Length: 317
Image (cartoon, rainbow, N blue to C red):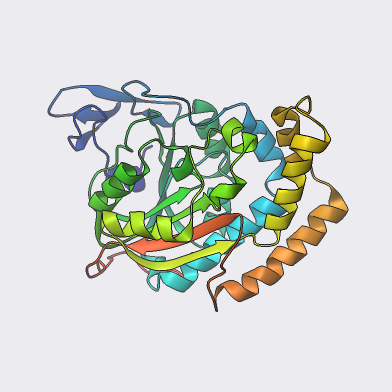
């Protein structure tokens, strides 16, 4: 966590929310005097988990193996990159902090695409150890169930398929709004269509799936101005309905959700290439219209106010 990027990262104490001060060993809270240590390049900003788990860390290995080629991960990262370029005109002047960075594949892709990176956090050491091997950014270990320990004046925040894992999604959006600078931007993805919620979502520790109007309402209640809000992955909806119905009924309850989960991570070359092609065609539509259905939703929302003028030299993205 050394260097100018780490020094400029605004973080707060997970216990009292006081802005933390830089320390040779990590970060120190001036209010409760606690020292949070950096170990092996990871700042351990933890006070203890609250509530039920949000993820199974043994999936990180599976994600790392397939995400560079699997149609779902390929399409999602390209949709996110396109949404940032389309909705954030001064993207080259911002740095993205990724909340819940997972195995780091998306963060690595965005960095390679020219998006400047501020850092990342996750609730699992397994995640951050993978991310450390992929990108060189400040990494923070945080608690499950607590609000992200981010300080004020954040420029660009990413929350990619994380909100559905949280018990208090509205409170999290309000917190993220409060730590963004005026003109600061939040980009997030969530699963769409509550009618698709089934044992697979329960296995993934999803609390919910979202409707477009519901997500817009929660963002606006938190104070955000919504710039982009659309479904994507629309070709997957009939496929998911069919496969999940077959998984539940054709194979009976003996066909365990865990087995079905493993099947979804499989790379079947012909099918994978066909779905990548369909989703590439869908991307051509996303800049022109809002799709009324799709298994995922992408949103870009901003805190009202003028954007900060950066002193950093701009870079093309």
